[in-house]
Amino acid sequence: MKRQLGAIGVLDFLRNSWFLIAFVAGVIYWVARQDSSLDELHRADSRITALENRTTILETGLGQLQIKIDTIREDVALIKTAVIQ
Image (tube, rainbow, N blue to C red):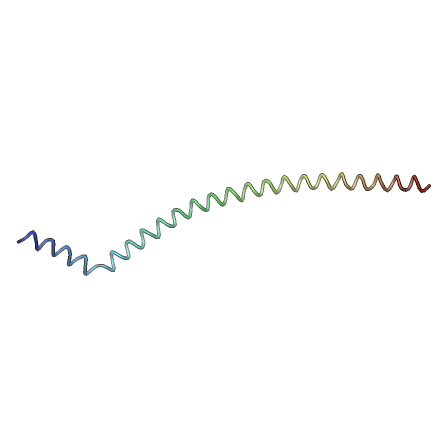
């Protein structure tokens, strides 16, 4: 008989404290989601760093091309001036 009362007591406790159990389960779920979000943030951060590096390389290359184009324009202008004279 004591064994049944113990089991019934546990069931009564669970039934009376369902809100506490739901709260604890919600907190555990939230913590698990936050942990996975941190991994996603690290991945996004590394992707952003890689994109920034690529952008810097492209900007450097574009700057060099612009200098070459400006040099060619100056040369063409000198050639036009020489041909016209």
